[in-house]
Amino acid sequence: MPIRTAIWRVAAQPEALAESSLAKEQMLETMIVATPRLLSDEWMLIGRQEDTGFGGRIDLLAIAPDGSLVLIELKRDRTPREVVAQPLDYASCVEKLRAEDIAAIYNRFAPGRSLAQEFRQRFGHDLDEETLNQTHQIIVVSASLDDSTERIVAYLSERDIAINVLCFQVFTHGTEQLLSRAWLLDPVRTQVSAVAPPDGPSEPWNGEFYCSFGHSESRSWAEAMQYGFICGGGGAWYSKTLQLLSPGDRVWVKAPGFGFVGVGRATGRAQPAATFKLVTPTGELPVLEVAKEGSYHRQFLNDLERCEYFVRVKWLQTVPLEKAVQEVGLFGSQHTVCKPTTPKWRSTVERLKEKFPDFSK
Image (cartoon, rainbow, N blue to C red):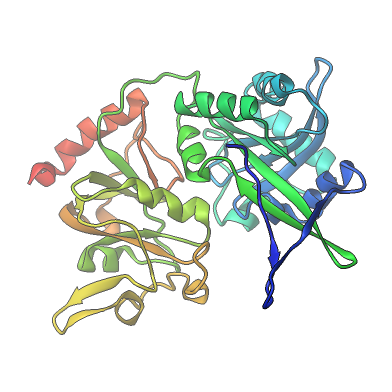
């Protein structure tokens, strides 16, 4: 069913706000450039109206925390076939962009500013050229969605093509206009599809989960070992992939900058910090009353998009950071949790089983 939103004025006799439209379609693009959060808190805009080299222009280009690119196309007045076909065509151009091409795009978008510096300031870690543009997402921005386009996008997504639709609607409220948005598919699903390059080497998933545990001022690996949890937060991009884990799933944990530090089995599902409790000698207590070595995004405790989320884990074997397993060729990703399908992940797990012999307990 095509996405439609209704907004009602709260009153004794509720009244629906009238749907309207922007005076100019170009206005939506301008608003997104001015306030990228209209699209997502998780992306950084790096390009606008980029020439594809074969007669088309990419409306907007963004980058995600893992260095993957996000191709954003406004529907405008395209036919149902063009809504999907055109961005797919443009994606063939995006996937060939090299590091120097992407830096040049950003220089045109933000003259005089460094992509590497802005990326670190925005996401808190360095931009790695090895992982830059290994994959990409396609986001279609539309004021409405027809049945045909919805079927095509769903079909592609089910086959692990990272594509999604973000629908905006405009409503009139007195002399003002209000903007609402709704995703066709869960953004986590699209994010997960973008973990492995669709055209790169792949193989059936081996059933082993990967976790990136960002040890920093935000969270403490020592506390995670002591109390049995993994976590992520600060934005939906970092926290929502924790939902991939179900009780019994085995997960291999890497602390970026250190190496692999443990393996365990999930014993629960992702919970926000406000409801997650730890088992202590005096009973169960709220996590933020016990875990004091990290901030765990306490300032966002009541914000379900940006708060820290936790998954309880029974550790099979762990090591402190100073004994982390770090070798050339081992798999790595900025995604908090993922299901890698690359040969590198299979060989990484085989090597880790040698380093963590208690993995099968």
